[in-house]
Length: 223
Image (cartoon, rainbow, N blue to C red; front, side, top):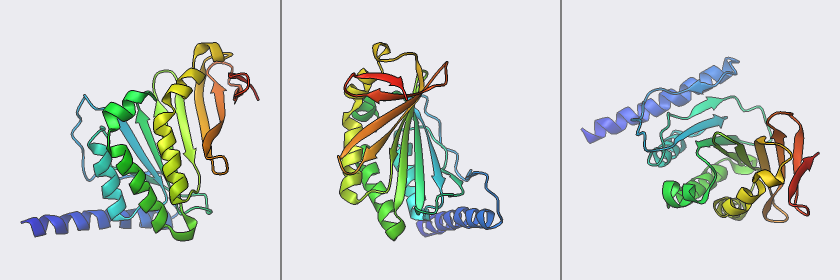
């Protein structure tokens, strides 16, 4: 019985991957969402979404899904065409939860380290092209995006560790006293040379203007 179940799982993963390759080669650019498994929706868990630009192996697909479904309500990863030819794969994770210390201490817990290690494996398997990752936190106020470019193992590990420890500083940056007006979206990039997250940019909720965060003044200003 266990052998039969394993064969079914492998066949299912192969079907998903083959379907993606067929649709990509056929010139279809719309996102492809696998619905072979519908997870049970536990209302006590926050919602997460996975969008992969390019491909994951069946093992990577299942490992990422299983790791996240322990802590979140989510469906199987969705796939879209990778338009950036300078990278091998881009994995985008969206967490429908405020960016705060409790997310790492109470929700993700020790699995944040597991996610970091899985990202390293995905990057390693892409060889010289590597892999990029985007982590987004969204709530009723602001959408916060952490963009990781092509990084080595140590850089990727440092960037992920810092994300888990910057909640207090980012929280101060997003206080109403630092803003000209409420911000709809904030994005930041990891800088390899300085080993820190910087270049925070945002879009105003009402005026749609672009803002940058001035660290010397500790406030947002128009770019």
